[in-house]
Image 1 (cartoon, helix red, strand yellow):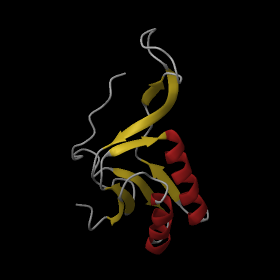
Image 2 (cartoon, helix red, strand yellow; image 1 turned 180 degrees about the vertical axis):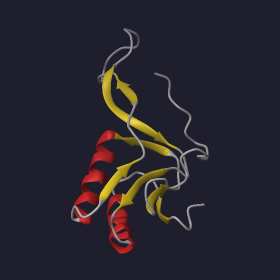
Image 3 (cartoon, helix red, strand yellow; image 1 turned 180 degrees about the horizontal axis):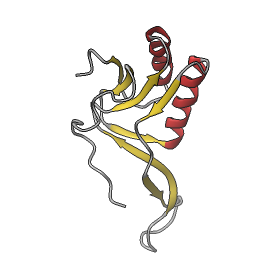
Length: 127
């Protein structure tokens, strides 16, 4: 699969749809499936299973890699991991059924697991 160009601003998935609170990306990057799962687990643990966490991204881009010390040629390398390209301004997670303070605390803990700058947004200040 070709690499997706991800260094642009997001115009489609930049609004909250399912709830009043969310986590928004401020920079463009790739998020691997392991980073996404680690972030999700830390946020669910911090929310103490009170509400619901909605993922708005999915790792659907396969990244391949050839082994070390292999000569050029002989085709494409084996699948290494799955990732998702995230543009700046995209909503990554939404928090449903929790108060603002709990959602903000969970977003702070989850954002430490991600490789980009994020921002906690509410329904009033999405843009």
